[in-house]
Length: 332
Image 1 (spheres, rainbow, N blue to C red):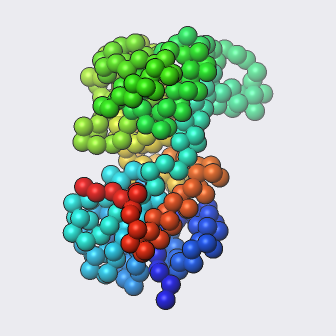
Image 2 (tube, rainbow, N blue to C red; image 1 turned 45 degrees about the horizontal axis):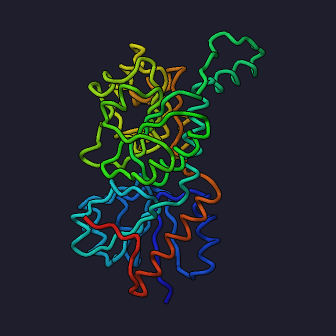
């Protein structure tokens, strides 16, 4: 009998990429559009593994029910795992993830946000479509010679740094575990967070979401930044305290912000909400600023990334079945 996997929170592009890659594996896949939560966890009855994405909920209650249903493996088709209660999972469910599906995709998208904000490309495009070819209000700055502060220097950040060095930017970096060989190679400087805040024209977040990094960007850290700083977040929404960000935008301390993530995104992102009023006042306020770009967690979204997500996820499951070492296992 084929190994059965229940996929939650799926979209047509998920089904397309996984169905194509599954021709090599032969699993039985059941797709569910709804996000995994306590109300639909009963759908895990009769399956061997469960596959989830960033907005699915695998808390202690959900994991308890899955375990009772006989689920042995929880496969995340993403890098982050802050939506999984690892303590609960340790009692009987193995957790695996996709640690890097395309660092190039996220790094390149981060640069796209920087350029779009700096040169005000969305505003310029809206104007010209309306027949307004004025340049008033569209002035940007040369990125050459400016300083970028990169918080977290994993695979994505290293590719980003390489790109920014190509622009002729100076780069300051912060990481709990600095890679000094990389720093010498790229001629960047590891520094303290305070120095990074004080000296950076653009700050980009690439660290994982932990108890230590939650709300890393807050009233206090913003107060240390340069006036008019640009903040980019393609990491996790809760790295930024959104109300603090809004206050910084209102008092002009923050010159612009590019957000591909939002701390309460699960209610909105990946869904068509165009026929309803946004009742999240904080998100609505963010969307009202003409110097803010908010996108729906799409930085990863390239053909190459989707292929890598499917391949790694299904290989993780196959390795689990065959009792092979799990290179991408997540433990508490």
